[in-house]
Length: 485
Image (cartoon, rainbow, N blue to C red; front, side):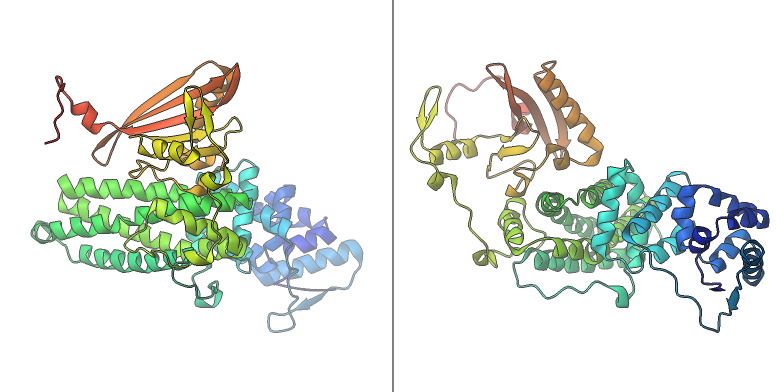
């Protein structure tokens, strides 16, 4: 047989298990090979050359020692192939082996090992893997109980992995109005704005320069914050469709990153309002870097992933719901809408009147009434999936048809999912029938009320009612007369 410094340790251990004891005698670091998981993961991708480096050994000495050990135990003739000769090509890892290796890396990060130490190993593992398979691998990790917050730590490595132009996923051109075209256009605009803002921060070196640039920084940061609408469209339009394809982990990981950026915007605005020049400039600078990193993650990982996964009909569904959420800096209007299937309206599909406890209404009238209520309503059925939301003109929280049928736990940021699940659990058991919250959001006082809906002893679902109570909160005294002035 032939071996070289490129030969994988895992391949050798599979054929010659006795090499484990030999390797342990050569370096303490090799004692980890006694762990079956390490043999299936790290050893599967580590060459003799790489193993020697990890053990602090000369690769040529280790290569020769392994050859001697094989001959001693088997009497097989072993040919050493020099690096300049015909090196043995590494056996390609199958998908299961890659997932196990990927999981090992995440677990090591979870155990405190710095991400920097794992960069080479991560890139070697995934250099020939598409963004879609990276997403599938993340999905399996979450199914095994790995927190999204741990997988999120690998996002920087994901970006590096797809940085080189030769490795960049190639997407075809999309017509104006196609969701991917809109996301790409907004990303290009966000990149330009973030880059310009970052450049400004680099010119501010003292309080005098900051005072002169402060208002411009505020306006530019406010303009850049329109990217949040872009994130909301991803959360409400792309993520539900990804979940329908079984890709639930990548959306959760990316939603956490969205929330991180939202916090960074809030921090930047606070420091621009009351902080010193150093704190404000630092906050804005870090914010622009985070926004630009997110653009890269979308362009190199997310968009190629969903392009591979979605059908044209599904892109039509995404497109129809986009206007409900809104856009960042642009509005594609009716572009590409004419090519999508138009869903049959409830009004045309229904026949006759809807009977209520007190009266009857045409479906279109009932829908109009619900749309005119000064509250947002969302109803989640007994299966914890969104069945309805009211399409009011001024929504407090963005909604689109993409959430219909979506599990409610996927409609909230990962940090608050446990609260939603607790409410539903208490509602179903009958222990509680209401829950309410109130928050300050963009200068508005928002009241959020949850109701357990029961009928004849049967739990029908949960109704969420949200209302902008800012004006109501300010009311004093009485107003008994009509006053339209």
